[in-house]
Image (cartoon, rainbow, N blue to C red; front, side, top):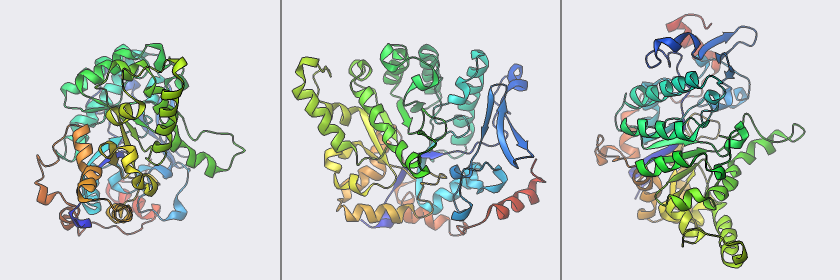
Length: 421
């Protein structure tokens, strides 16, 4: 196999939501109370605003093709970022240029698990806005280019029964994934061990909906003390997947729902062998504690029910057999600061070659595992010969991948739409 022959499915990207998000899918009775994108003249930035707070968009979450010196946490406007961040047609151009066939996208302003909507004390309003978001995501964003996106709606994390109903609703619309949080207690909701979320997880298992749990989905900003260096607080969230996985692995939820599937989005893979070593040690030595996994070992549970997702993880690839070759999937993380765009295929290929992966292993890691877990046929719309990195990039030779400043994008946006704000 060559780099150009790879087929890439990214199981973790992000949308910077367009300003007309709630225009079509929110019932009229709620439109005056819906979140709206407003302009803060003092800060020169836009924020999604409603009666329950604001959500600014920092540049660190939309940095693709911006010069590195312009990256940072300062909030900005949509006009100052690459159009592929918020415009679906431009996103497809960028996916082609990057050699990516299909993408599963997480939300931005609502938070990775929809925590923004959970702040509404008017639960009817919160649910209406969340469902409008999901309908936009499935019926507009994903449907705009069939076969190129895997729908990933948001779950209402404030109520297990309501969340279960939303699982069944979006399943009828064709969704095969739904978001959840690493830790609902951070939001003031019950623990996953309380039984409150049993209806949600049971519905996901019954509908074959993968629960996607993104790092940072239980925090706002970066965790840690303000006295700590930024680098500490910026590098640690990846390991949030470890306590999340431990809590789920030992929970009644996984034991009671053996067909439940959970994706640890952006959690990486290199920590998993040591994690499994510890889980196995505990399982076989601490018998007095009655570690009940329904007759399976921790490694068996993990490989059957957890999908490990990575951007760039050379050590994890070297230990792929210990992780489980059928439980690893690839992600680009467009347009966040950790993403590999526009050189995703180059960076991934180098790691795969260094790890001496076989063609069979490469196919599993790059697309086959993702297609199987999320129940998509990657070639239903795009024939296999046209789905490769080389074939997709050949479609996109006119896509400008140059480094451009915020001022460049803002001028282009204002030329078409008028002044920002």
